[in-house]
Length: 204
Image 1 (cartoon, helix red, strand yellow):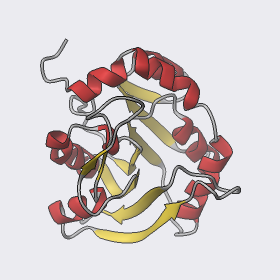
Image 2: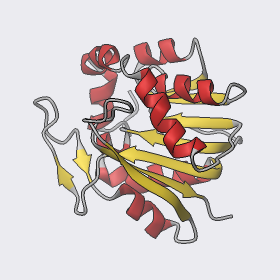
Image 3: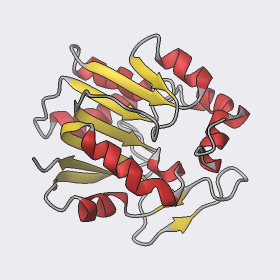
Image 4: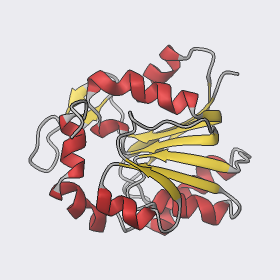
């Protein structure tokens, strides 16, 4: 195993990550409605997308329904999840920090993935989101004005809340937040896990 793999990544490569697959197979219609509110409402046109931490690909599935000609690509570290996703979308099985490509995508996406990263690796993650984007970056994550760790299903140091978008903008100050909002767990039409989203236009 690569010595650079973090404890958090090992966690998602393990049996816990395999079990998460079943929990991740829900709410596709809600996900599609939320993407419509975020992207279609803002008149965002995309032809390609790469998702960092795609799991089985339900976010990419929803995006393909909104953008039928979308060139979709997922990066996933869990082998079982990747095998399911890769039947529907192109992809790379491995760490987001090991991913390398000469290609750029109209949209780079992280949805519920930054929260599970080792905090010391976030700058590298932000760099990948920026460098592989042609124009847009979309972050859908738990928010906290100050960094805080949260016990995640009985495990410590596996979930962190912070102002990811603020840190991204501080790192790339010429980038612009196009829109932002909240996905509420009590919304029966477009359910979400009480996460904040930030749609960012890359500085060119």
